[in-house]
Length: 117
Image 1 (cartoon, rainbow, N blue to C red):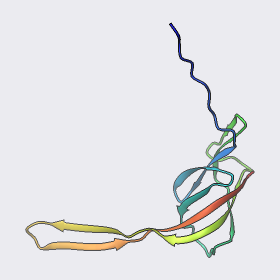
Image 2: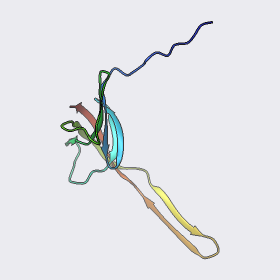
Image 3: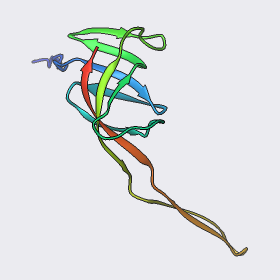
Image 4: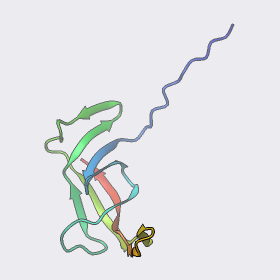
């Protein structure tokens, strides 16, 4: 009877897990990700740095922060600034003539990861 063996198919590139906007993102060099809008004055083409690195994996060596890695950062460039599609929110109570309706468009940044250091 033949037995199946599971091969380790780990990715070859380095990656990091960063935290921004209250969310965590797994990023690789050259990747474009969509993140929450950051506070401050930014425009397309600006360089940003994420210093809240939670995890760093490079060639099979994984380093985990407690909670963040000291001296590590991820460099990125803003490629797009925009707002998502409108989400309609409705509050309704039957038999009481209560009806509220409003919309929301969440602002976002698209950033291209330049380097993980």
